[in-house]
Amino acid sequence: MRLDRAVSLAGLTRSEAKKAIAAGRVRVNGVIAADPAMKVEPAQVSVDGAAPVDAGPQYIMLNKPAGVVTATEDRHLNTVLDLLPEALRRRGLGPVGRLDRDVTGLVLLTDDGQLAHRLISPRWKAGKLYRAECEGRLTEDDVRAFAAGMALSDFTARPARLTVLQAGDDRSVADVELTEGKFHQVKRMFAADGHPLIALRRLRIGPLTLDAGLGPGEWRRLTEEEINALKTSVGLVE
Ligand code: URA
Image (tube, rainbow, N blue to C red; front, side, top):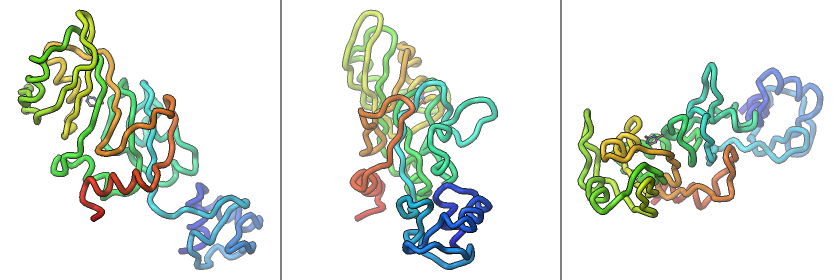
């Protein structure tokens, strides 16, 4: 690819890339390069002495805080992309599925369209695990109601596994795993079951677990093992 395009992958606009090249800030194989049209491999290119440009798909896990919308842009509210540094924001990443504004926890962001598509497609049945805090005492009846496939006003949810972690008269805590993701689905299921939600947090998408070391709003790149496990789970790696 052209040198200015490779430089833009480091997070610069095309015109910033041209200026950086003209200013001698860009090296190809360690040698200052002056021609923006020069043909290069991104891995040969470094800007301001930083690590070589990574042109491959990007995979980011984010611990979404409440109040942030799962979108790439919004006129009034902060989006999950606003939590990433400029260089990553320019890479065309998108969230895999959505969390409501008040819901916290794991959001996967990637520009790997095939993986994203499969992880949200009901066909591949990638499980999404949520930790739910709800009103009232959850019992075995509720576990059975979730497992039976709950009838909501416009569709019947697929059977979901509910694991009760704490049951009190006023509030209970449970993990719930779904293999589909319709609009407000977890909230609607708990409400239909007579236990309105107090808080909801996503802990896992397929085999990818939210890193407990990430505070609200923090992110990190996935490891190779995590990327492979995700791809394998949806038939993209043998
Ligand atoms: N279910 C919901 O109700 N909200 C979410 O954000 C995710 C699942």
